[in-house]
Every structure is written in C-alpha cells, then in structure tokens.
Image 1 (spheres, rainbow over the protein chains, first blue to last red):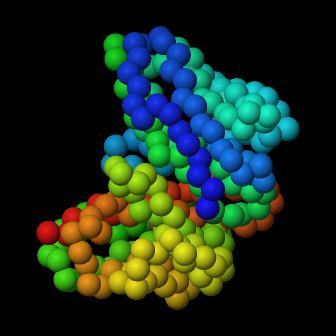
Image 2: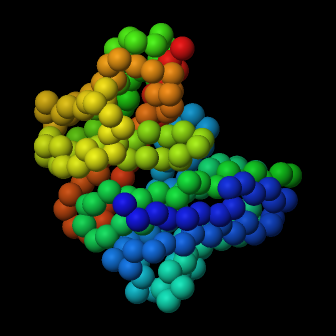
Length: 112
Length: 115
C-alpha cells in the first residue's frame, strides 16, 4: 500500500492557538481524505473528510486544506481548546469501500 | 446504535498462549476491518472482510495470526502461539458498503500484553 506521511509527530499549542497537521501522499488514485480523532482508551472516530474536487472544507472549528498538485492536505483547528487534546490521523483511499491508508498520527496537546 | 463492540478490553497472557479477540460490528455494516496499533508502526490494517468473506489478508503478520467471520455479527482474530512482539492495541472497525465512501466506525480496542 502507498504510504501517507504525516507530520509533526507531536504538537503542543496554547489554548486559542491554531494547530496545523500536515499530510502528504503519493498515489494519485487516492480520492477521499478523512481525518480521524482518537482519545486515550478509545478507537479513532471520523472528524472531517474531503474530496479532491475542493480545496477547503470547514466543519465547525476544523478545516481541511487540500492541494491536489502538491499531493498534500492539512488539518487546521481554530480556537483550539484543551478538549481537542487527542491523537489525529490523516488517511486516504480510493473511491469505494477500500481500506484506508493511515498516517502515523499526531499527538496534540492544547494547554490552558 | 450500539457501536462496534470488542472484547476483551484488556488481555494479559504469557508467551505461547492462544489469544482470541472478538468483535461485533454495527448491524447492517457489510465491511469489517481488523487493525493493530503500536507506537512504532501506527495503525496497520491486518485483514478485512466483505459480507463475511476475507478480501485482503496481506497485512496479517505471519501464520500465527488468523481471522474468521462466521456470520454478519461476529468476527474473531486469533494469535497462536502468542509472542511478546504481538503486544499492541487491536481495533475492529466496520462500515456500510453502499454509496460513496462510508466512514469506518471503530471499537474501543483490545489492549493485548504478552509477557
């Protein structure tokens, strides 16, 4: 499977800051890019997802930016809160119910 | 919706023992996935099923690992014999098959420790 490279591995921001997590992929056949959020002791849960026909998608305080030519996408969390402290995974797949290819995750800590 | 249910939540056993992890997917979901999560390797797909049939088991690390899905509401992942390097959190996830990409719903995992 093609890899999805995620950075940084960990991130610490102050409350109200805007953490940014970046992902890059190689397989141009990928056409669905979800982000999953995982709290300690829980399984990952879908947070937000984007298709390559748009460059940005917002849901509440979470925004995905997508750059098809660069094969990169990123997650921005506006006005971050301590409750956003979690591990975030980017992923990619081709259309249809094929398995997700996950990045290695970013552990985010938002400190008050 | 009860969500994906995994059992046990924690398992501690000695090397060489057989380990069986269990998963009940969300009713109506046609796809079931088994993942392993470690600090070093992140989330790795081990195997996935569609309508109870294994589709891709290329992620299963070796013959000591096996998975079955005898019916739409139950799957097992078995390790025999277990080794300390199998220690990890194992997740089961399920999703619908219809329409465009459907989110995978994960269980809360089984934390496995092999001594």
